[in-house]
Image (cartoon, rainbow, N blue to C red; front, side, top):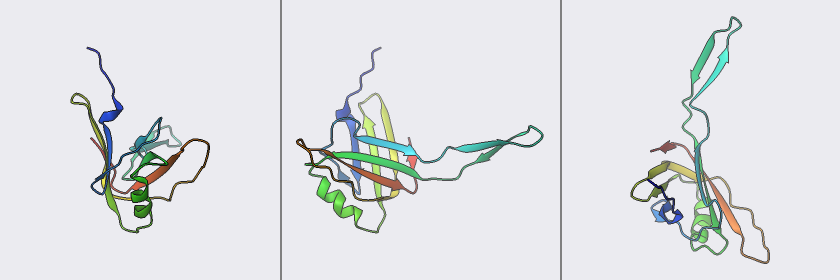
Length: 132
């Protein structure tokens, strides 16, 4: 069976608002910040596994400079109140979801002005990151 990926089935929802106007290339990224465990070896060669309880994750959205969601995220970046962020992919066969209920925008994106419209990258720190 042939599997197909279609970016139109990828979405990001920030505090209940669907984001639109993504830039070309990789436009949504989500990942856990830390490994599930770490290891070390004792002086006598015994392996020790330490479980990580770190629930931090990072979501990055790259919007076009002309995105209708850009002003909304600029406003959210200046607020000091956590909000939910969820990224989803669901084409009816493949389903993925990542994010959390407590996130903030780390900083406003850098500005670059060129002959063509550029991208604006928003990085969210998610305090209760989860994946499904």
